[in-house]
Image 1 (cartoon, rainbow, N blue to C red):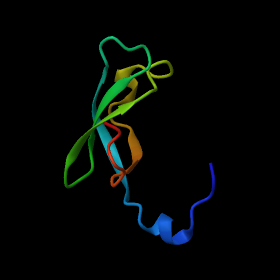
Image 2: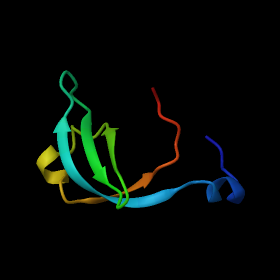
Image 3: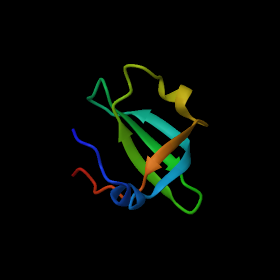
Image 4: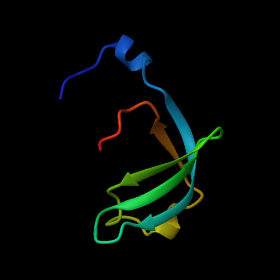
Length: 73
């Protein structure tokens, strides 16, 4: 993995959001589905953190979200 230039970094839309819902993804040991309030919209994200956090621990936490990444699927 290499470095990115400052001009590439400036293209990122980085926001702080609050987790308002969290639930384990059925059939997965690692995945948690998060609903994140970004102020002007809510987004659903999936994170591979179920081995480290219970979903109830995540609700109310603030996280950093890069909002303009291309979806994986």
